[in-house]
Image 1 (spheres, helix red, strand yellow):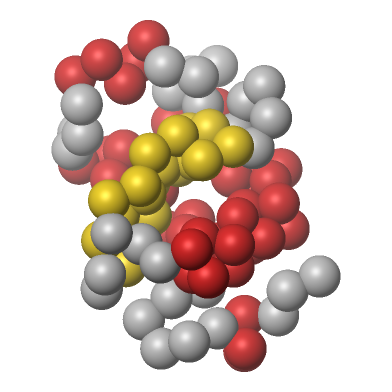
Image 2 (cartoon, one colour):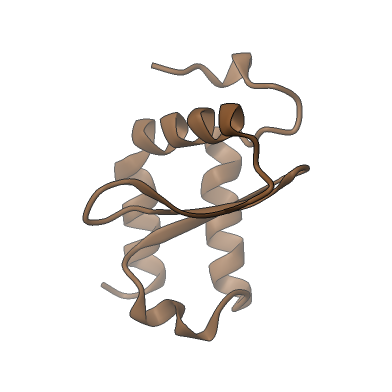
Length: 95
């Protein structure tokens, strides 16, 4: 299990993963086709941004500039908080 205290500076914590997902969704930012996509989360870091599918399984959907080491840590945080993130997505999208 990953601990957020070991993350390098600039890597989002589990709390910021949740809040960034919620605020992005509320603001209407993102691709207009996102409503047709499976549940997912966007993560922005100082180096770039990435997107992970939450269903049918957690998987990297896209990456622009996030280093592999940071991707692994982000993926670990998503696995650790999978149910919270899915619930936030479902609540936002009335699923």
